[in-house]
Image 1 (cartoon, rainbow over the protein chains, first blue to last red):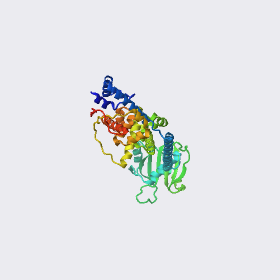
Image 2: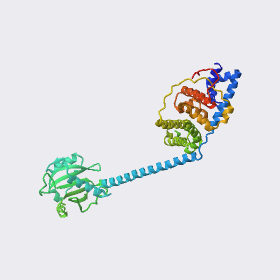
Image 3: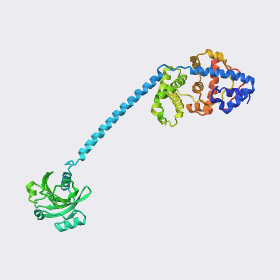
Image 4: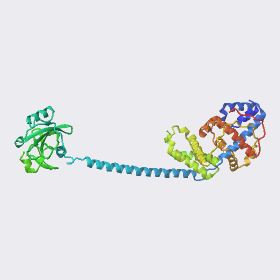
Length: 252
Length: 175
């Protein structure tokens, strides 16, 4: 490395910085120590660099710039928070509205009354259509089928109901347990396509929390059906048919 | 993540040097203020993505430079200048004459440099950044930084002394 090489390299040298660690600059600096003319040039160069560095660093930032930056950012954050709150409120309101709607939609009639819910559900099954698992006019076959299917089969029918012709049976479900559905035909004219007009649902009494105590049947109109509910033994019975209270009382 | 960096402290630490860099590039107070503010706005939005807190300052300078280039590109398309070795003729600039100049004159001379030399020269004098850090900020190879610095400094000194350089014979640095 000659003197001119060193000058070229040292042009990029700033006193008091880490530039001296650069291998090329370190080599040039070593030459400065041995070359008096180069040392004189280097001294002037360092002075120039210091002056220029000082000039650049004298650029004054406008008064209030810092405060302006901070306040601008704070304003933006407030705007973001406001927008976020608006969006959050809108989402929250939508969720609440949906929850209310879902609650209203899904809430079974009867509210928190398990017996009413059960009654409504079974009436609905009778009215909305069902498929008989076994079509027969033989009560014994119905019991056998239900027993085989592990649905309640040891039910006791009121004497008047014993005289009504059976048409078959189906198995419904209530909270995961089986409900026996025995279908009857009272003898009245049936609507086209219908095979039954009287239904008896039997379930384990313990499974319906507020099942009535053993006693006279409780009558209630549910949709188009008049229903009677009573407990006997460990079973809960629900009988339903179209008509009025008199109609069903004749069957109990 | 740089989540722990307090915005107000960050501004306090860096707004002045960022403004100086911005002003060196634009020579316009309003533009420099805008660039500085915009840089901190970008930090507020994206700074949390920076994993290494020690790189905050470099990140800010890089962002400011990008914003400057982005704004300039809308006005004029820069021609790409290939790397060239710096001319080796070194100007002789007496420090006493430099002392008589004020900062505005120095910046006016800086503004006469080609665009590609302005940022490295400004960073060279404003900050104690290493060549590697300047390369990171400007997002160019370190060899390019050294070349641009050599040419930019040479030209700056020529302009400051008001004439052509005289001195040592031509030498090309090995960059």
